[in-house]
Each structure stands twice: as C-alpha cells, then as structure tokens.
Length: 111
Image (cartoon, rainbow, N blue to C red; front, side, top):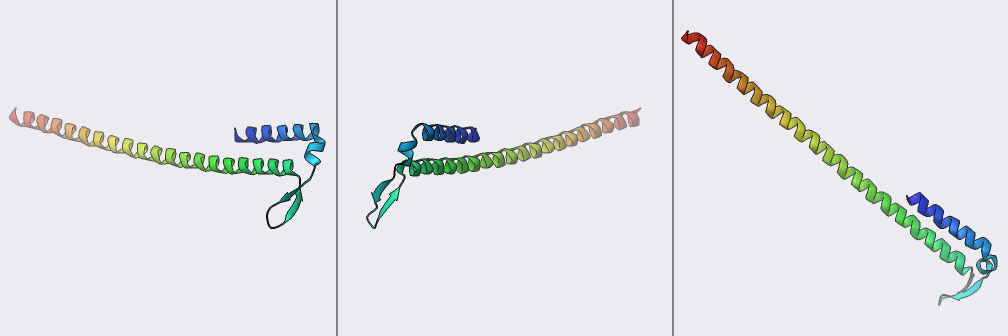
C-alpha cells in the first residue's frame, strides 16, 4: 500500500511537471533572513512532500514491525499455554489411570 501511495505521488508530480513546465522551472529569490537564495519553489515543495512521505513510510514500517513482534510473542505465549494444558491433562489422565489400577488391585485382593 505504501508503495502505491509513493507511485501515485510521483506520477501526479511528473504529470503536473510536464503540464506546467514553466511554472516548475520559474525560479524565485527567497530571503531567509541571513541571505537571499534563488530556488525553484514548486520543486522544493515537491521534495518536501516526498520527504514527508518517506518519513511516513518509515514510521508505518516501524509500526508494522512492532505489530509483528507483538503477534509473534502472543503466538509463543499461546503455544506455551497449550503445552501447559496438555501436560496438565496428561497428569490428570495418569492420576485417573493410577486410581483405576488401585481400584482393580483392591478388587483383586478382596476376591
């Protein structure tokens, strides 16, 4: 999904760039207080937008990675709980079997 967003962003910018060639190639003097620079303001704006999209992609991938780690830890916990439940059931079955054997031994002794 994030690559689709980047592709749409770049395709739209390239399309607008070819339609408005003179608008994108017009340079303006920008005074930043400590000096005056000649820049292409729309190109700078597009680069800033791309930078923001890259930051979003990194943040989104970190969030996905965090979710994957959480899911993996929960799956480990589920497996551990299933093993514990299986061990308890085996212990209960062993107790029931020993009780049954004790009863059969008592009946054998009585007869």
